[in-house]
Structure formats: C-alpha cells, structure tokens
Image 1 (cartoon, rainbow, N blue to C red):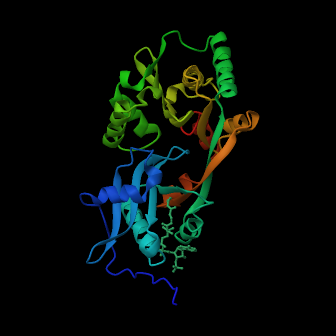
Image 2 (image 1 turned 90 degrees about the vertical axis):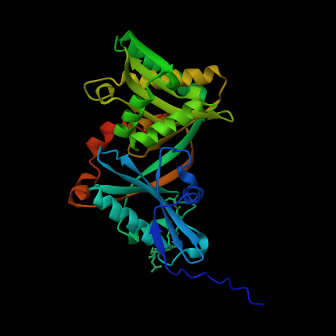
Image 3 (image 1 turned 60 degrees about the horizontal axis):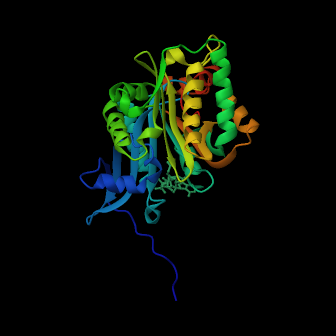
Length: 330
Ligand SMILES: CC(C)(COP(=O)(O)OP(=O)(O)OC[C@H]1O[C@@H](n2cnc3c(N)ncnc32)[C@H](O)[C@@H]1OP(=O)(O)O)[C@@H](O)C(=O)NCCC(=O)NCCS
C-alpha cells in the first residue's frame, strides 16, 4: 500500500486583500489575533481556479517598545501548501506595503516551542530576534497586596492627586481612549474604536477601567475575567503621568491596584499578565512573587529602511523607560 501523501502543488499564487467572506477565512487562519480585536487589515494568499485559500496575513500599526512605529504582522500558511513560497509571498506583500507607507520596521511574534518552523523562515527573510514576551499566572492575593502597598505608600507621600477617579470604560470617552491606544499601543483610530465599542457591549465590559485626573484620561486598563482568571491584555498611561526618574509612576500603581482590588472583591483567585524579558521592574516582580510562566512568544523585527535599522535596535535606556510604564505590564 502506498502511504505517501501527495502535496498539492500551488499554481497561480496571488496575494491580495480579502473580498467578502474571505476576511473571515483570514481570521480563522490567524486565531492568535482574535483577542487583539483591533487588528483590521488582512491579505489572503489564493491560487486556482478553482479558488483555494492557501494562507493569510494580518497587520496593524504598532508602537515598538523603543517608541518607533511600524506594523505588527501575523501570518500562517495552511499545512498542505507549505514550502512552496506562499509564506514568502505573504511576507513580501507586507514588506512592499510597509515600505510604501514609509514604515521603520515589521514586528512579528510566534510561539517558539510549538511553531518550530517559524524561526528559520524569519531568519531566512532577514528578521532579527528582538525580545521575548512571557505570559504568567499568579495568585491574585499576594499580587493585590503588593500593588496596594505601593499605591498606599505613594498616597502617604502625597504623590496621588485628590481629584482622581476610576471609572468603567463605558463611562469614558471611547474616542479619546482609542486615540491614546493608537498613540501608545497601535491600531488605527477606526479599528480601535470599533473594538472598544464591542468590548463595552460585551459581558465582561466592567473589567475594563479608566483612570481620570479631573476630566482628563490618564490611564487605561483593558482585560477580561473568565473562568476564575483575570487576564490583563493592555495597560497604558499618558506620557506626562508615566513613571520616570523624576516622577513616581503613581498612575500605573493606582490603576493596577484598583483593578486587582476589584477582582479580589469578586472572588477571583488568579491573575494572568504578560511582560517583556527586558522589562526589569516587572521581571523582578515575577521573581519575587514566584509567578508561573504559562506561555512565551518570541518577537522578531525586520527593519525596512536605514532609519529603522538603527532606530529599532535595542536602545536599552529608551526601551526601559517605556516598558516601565506603558504596555505589557500587569
Ligand atoms: C513559517 C511559514 C509561514 C512558512 O511558510 P511557507 O510557505 O512554508 O514558506 P516558504 O515556502 O516561503 O519558505 C521560505 C523559506 O523559509 C525557510 N523555511 C520555511 N519553512 C521551514 C521549515 N519548516 N524549516 C526550515 N526552514 C523553513 C526555508 O529556507 C524556505 O525556503 P526553501 O523552501 O527554499 O528551503 C509556515 O510554516 C507557517 O505558516 N507556520 C506557522 C506560522 C505561525 O505560527 N504564525 C503565527 C505567528 S506569525
């Protein structure tokens, strides 16, 4: 009996924006972007006739930890069509489009343990390893106590303004939150706004909180509590309120302590968060509270031009100042 599986050969490969229901096919091929609901741009790899869907690419504006802007990209080729140039064609589509937009770089992340083929592919295409984003789980109790002790200490020192308020996302200006998301995390205004509208209409809307000083939004915490675990997806703080050598970072402490106190009040036992390996304050916290690693993503960068090549190489001071206060924190 012949057990050899015939590889379907690719003929007439085309990479183009999806039409109609093809966007749904792209989303199905790229489940990793599902939680980051603000990704809104896609390309699809097809051949035929008859038309076959071979792979998909998603991309969105993103802000690198160094502060430079590029695109985050995610792509996948369906198993039967691999090693026939489909992945390279998808990537080339992103590179060409990125260059036309004058971007500094493309950034992608993958699971280095379960997606072993990605790293050789990226290396062949000129990407450089950049950082690792690890996801941890931890008992919510000790984490809450720790963050609340920092917040209370800052309050005793008089660092926290009297006119702060913490409100659910639905009670704040979604337009302004979206604008800040675009500035500090990425996405486009329209796509982020559409995502936020879905979040506030959903069953876990109340898990998303906004910190105000007077009427000014200074911090946002986006996440979800599900099956006894409170997951933080994104936290960002307005630049003037971020912790730096001359400023304590009270806004971050207040926002996180409040979110944690709230989930503890609801009886949630576990918290889940992600942090970059270069984020030293967070890595110290992970070690101190013995957080359990549950997943890791390897991040790669492809500089697209002269400015990108130098700008996106790790400038450790620049990187640290952002990671200490912006995204990927608890
Ligand atoms: C990585 C991936 C996109 C490659 O797609 P592909 O269509 O097979 O890639 P190509 O045919 O264009 O390969 C180009 C080159 O990359 C390298 N490469 C690709 N797959 C490889 C593998 N499994 N092992 C070693 N090298 C590999 C080779 O050098 C290859 O050239 P060659 O075939 O002439 O030797 C595909 O395997 C995939 O979709 N994997 C899962 C991706 C994923 O996890 N995405 C989520 C985060 S981005």
